[in-house]
Image (cartoon, helix red, strand yellow):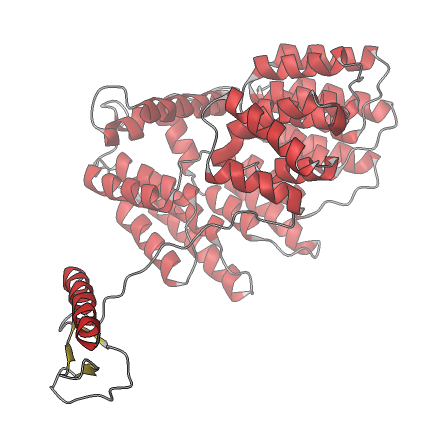
Length: 498
């Protein structure tokens, strides 16, 4: 028996040693004649026999350690135990088709006898990018279950989810299904539907939904008015938004600061900052609203977007004079007033006129969808840059004029002065500086701003990488574009065009 034990021990150690050698590790373990494990240090000195075999890293590999990826938590908040059972099953092993999903859900109902709260927790935790399609299927299934007792809020959530995804046909069917089941849509349901049409630039359908809501005797509140005004603003129709504002004031419905900002932004995007200031003065004079930081920021952005830097700075100074502390977004809009990347791209991509910016965003979104399908001619970098790197729009090798350099220096000086006053620049401000330098052909300075941003410990977001990518694209530096794109893929970033 002792001989057998020694043989088994030798065999186990030999197998273990082969695994260590394969993984770049070395173990120096021996068996003495008595069959007891005898351990030795790398220099040959013997360790205590009571110790287990010691694994010693091979020379030159001591600094390398295997880093296991961090496991993503199954849930992000508190859920019931019954909900956790379903979440774990759906996330760890997603169903391959709708029939399999329904079978699992029915088995879950039979097995744990859930309550309404259990399914609500499940739906809340399933609202992530990788499980969104599964979420819609679960929500649709829940509406047909008697034990769940679906109400208008449940249907509204499904309508909102389809609307955010741009699936208007399914959204309309879900809205019609609510009425077919005897549940009357309320103010929130119509507001969500109107907002979905606004996202898709379907102004006529949004107006039809608004009129239907009024015909049913539903009185809109400030949020509903703001939603419809935002639809007009995105469609480049600020005059209609102001008409709705007048109707709102006539109905004794007090607008909020969010309402005011939506009107200001609408006129700013339409290239009419003076009207934005006029509407702001009118609303503030007819109500007891006190402008906040967002209101002054919207005014500054409206003037700055249209190249009127002095008025943008004046709006910023009024904010400070009112005792408000500017935030990172306020400083970023002021930096963009000195010459933003968005305005330069608008010229290159031909995005002029009312609604041109929104049209440009839709065009860039289509380019991203083409990239996702892997179709189109040319390299991936050329597809990413789109029209910005065309022969007509390329600014490769363009030298910035002295006036442009002066504007950039003024923007940097402004940021430094604000930092000295205790307003530290954040991610938005650094991103705007990158856009400013790149729009004037100062790509090297844009890259230096990006490096400084990382040096001070700020984490770039997807918009930052997008602006840096566009800077290199406008300069024709495709190698740097490729490096930025790879970094975005590693970090999971996606291009965004605010």
